[in-house]
Length: 388
Image 1 (tube, rainbow, N blue to C red):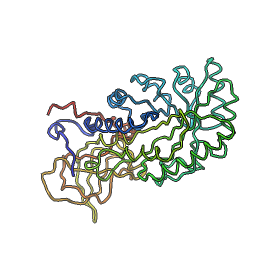
Image 2: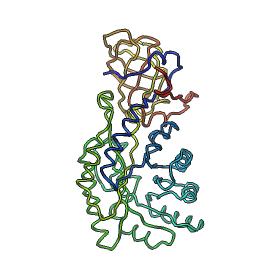
Image 3: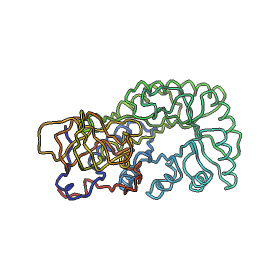
Image 4: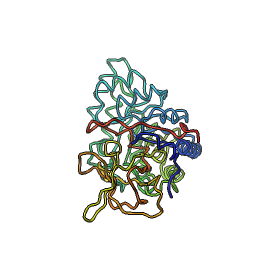
């Protein structure tokens, strides 16, 4: 089923551009808030890396969520957009001294620490500022998320996080440092996870780890389970709201919490992906010997995911007058062989000038755009910009 777009309005707009359906975003946030309200000790921090468009951030901030940041720049954006510093968590395997100092000086909620050396640097910098840095430790639970290798992050050998085996020693180290306050444990096993069994397996690992730390007298106030909830890229119109209900229930039924413990989630893709589409025009239809190419005016500079790791986005012709489909290799204009959105894609018969939508592009789309080949960055439009 095709999406609903203000096609007549699009005809007068230069392509490519991003289009955000604010109704979809609001419905997503409302359902998320409803499911979250069932648990008085659950908190959501929006993963700014998914989409940092100011108008999107404003809506998410107004919905009452915190912010998950992976750079000093994202912390700066979150503060500028009005997110409370006490709701900002800062992850990232390579935090610079400048970024750490910025987080400290703004009293963010916590640093998710990913190595012993990082912990020691944070303690030193906090001492210079006369502050106590609140930290959680990102632990690799060695859980297979059954997702793409490039977005699997919870296995033992990974650039992210600390091994389970090193958890005890680094927590004990933190408890001995004068400018560190140990807040809890952080996990993130991967992204675009649709199998709840992966999250269940994470719960079992956390339960075992907590039992071990408790036996040593270590009290853990916060458990941050990361994000990772996947969405439906194949059928964005029919399944535009992620399964937040099953997601939270999985943790409620399997994660053994202690009295007063809080659970934090870092959701990004599941909040913004379905509300966004990249809108492009057909430049040429090119016939090869055996293949037919649909060449768009958008490419990997506007939507990198397909070139980066073969990600799928539903491709729809919004303005075709035909009711028959043809098979195309849908490609962009960038001077790279990997600039391909999809091969053997069945789309309504297309001609030069037709409007094309690449769906489910509201996460890791606009935010990853580049100016390679000296292209301009894509602009963005919102459904409430148009008076229909």
